[in-house]
Structures are given as structure tokens and as C-alpha cells.
Length: 385
Image 1 (spheres, rainbow, N blue to C red):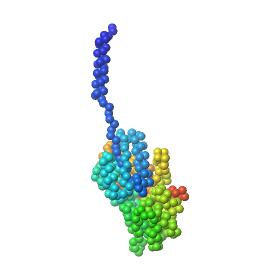
Image 2: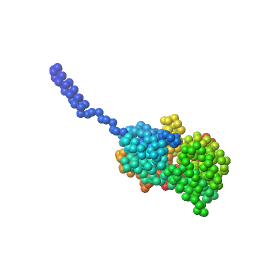
Image 3: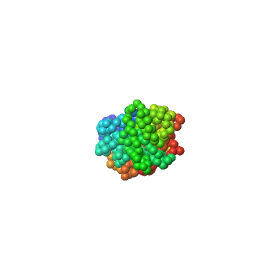
């Protein structure tokens, strides 16, 4: 039997009403809010080469985790915080990070900046995976890079190899990290006569350090120990070369940057050895990072981007394990990081102070291509925490 036209219209109208009601009852679900994190470091200024490399390390980690669906089902958004390696900007930059809604920060890099603004980050519930090496910032977040107390024993072992207690004269930038390193290493290099190791101050930004090198050499040292950042260190290397001296030279970790070689030139760079970390291409665990970095940025990775890459990834792992981005639970999981397979090597965090155990610290030299490489002849074992 055929249906009446009226009943058909009623049925259609009823179905339309049900469909409309369903659409009103089930609106489209908005995407969850993104997780905002910051990279803080010297993106402009004299140390910008380092800062850009470190930013790229975090950027690579963020893009990779977002390609896998983000963290906790949320996209990660990365913001830049340029402190120019200037402690006077530390709190201003940290406030900008807070105002942007960041829940975590990778950085800062410079110790003189970190001693100022790491307490601010912690007080405002922003989780820091910091890059400072001064022991003054131990316990303020976590770090995967070496601390002064882990670098100094490698330097001391190297300098003591030939004669037990050589005469050392130091050229020292009085910044937080460099002065702290000089104090620690200098105290360990005092010989049996108890005479303190001589220290000559280095003022940042001078066009030449010929006079300071001459002053140091006049004290007839066996070794010149240079505790500066690379803009000054490269000029000191040139002055040492020009002095035509046979005195040995050891520069500390803050000078390890491709820009050092660019500025000083290969012959002057080869005049010294360095404590520190080689560029990513020389790191035994970093091959996948190097390949991805070159593909993404069409550039050669430097030293510290590998460490910020690992920093971002242990942060994401801690957020995932804690099920939140909140400071307390995330920090608790970060402190429990154990045997994480990082590009800088296995990472275990000391829960007592937030510092990495068994850090990769080496004695380096510059090869004929201008690359920092591990000096196997001079190398001492890495110092445990």
C-alpha cells in the first residue's frame, strides 16, 4: 500500500528536526590549548652563534614532538627569549616568558644571567631545564650540561700530567661562570709552596689583549689558563701566538664555539687546547641529531644545541610521565630521569641537586679543518658528579 504524501512530509520533517537537534547538542570540539615553552639565551650580541644553535636544538625537538601529536595531546609552542648574555636583562626577559604563558624554559645559558632569574622562574612555577655551569645554580631546576665542579677536575688532571704541579697563570673574565671556574681550578693548582695562582683580569670588549698576555708571560708560567668566553678568548689566542712563546695554553669550556676559530683563525686556535664539549658532529651519540639538524636548518650544528635538544626532550618526557605541565609534578619526574638515551649520551639526573651525573667533558684541540675534536692524547676521564 502506498504512503500518503502528508505522512511522507511529516517523516522528512521529523528526521530534519532530529538532525538539527543533534547538531545543536554536539558542537565541534575545540582543539586543546597549546603548551608554551621558552628558550632563553643570547640570540643577539657577541654570543649569538651559540644562542642560535641552542635555539635550533630546542626547535628541532619541538617540531619532532609535534609531528608525533605533541605532548599530552597538545601542540607545543616555542617562544624566543633573548637575554643577550646580559644579567641586566635577566629579570626583564624572565617576566616576558611569564607574560607569554610559558610553563617551562630551556635556559638560560650564561651563569651570570641564571643566578639572577632562575629563582624568578621557580617562584612563578615555570620549570627550568637550565644550561648554566656555575654550581651556584645547583638545585634550581635541572641541567644536562656540566657544572664547574665536574669540569675543573678534568682541567686539573690535564695540567698536572707533565710535571705534577706546573706554574699556572690565569687570565680571567670576572663573570659568574668564568670567575667560578678560575677560583676552583686555581685553588687546585696551588703547589707545595702555598703561593696562590696569579690571576690577571680580562675586561670584556677590548680590541686586543696583547698587554694582558705580556703581563702573564712576564710571570714565567708553565701554563696559561684562560677563563673567558670566546669573544675575548679568540683575541687572547691571537696575542699568545703573536708573542711567539712556548708556554702551554688551556682555555676553558666557554671558548668552545666555531666562532672562536672563525675570529682567531686556525693557527691561533691550534695554539691552545680546551676543556669542554666537541661540536655535535664529534659526539659519539649524536648522529641522528646531526642529520636532522642539517636537513632542517641547512647548517652545521654547533656545541650546545645538542644539549638543548636533550633538555627539551627530557622535559617532554617528564610532562608525559606526570600527566601535567605543572611545575611540581614535572620537576619531580625530571629529577627521576635515569639512563635517558640522549644525543649527548645517557642522561641520569642527580635527584639531590638536579645536576647530571657522568657528564661528557673532554680535552679538545682544533684540527686542520678548524673543527674542535677530542684530543685523545691529552684526554682525562670525565669526572662523575
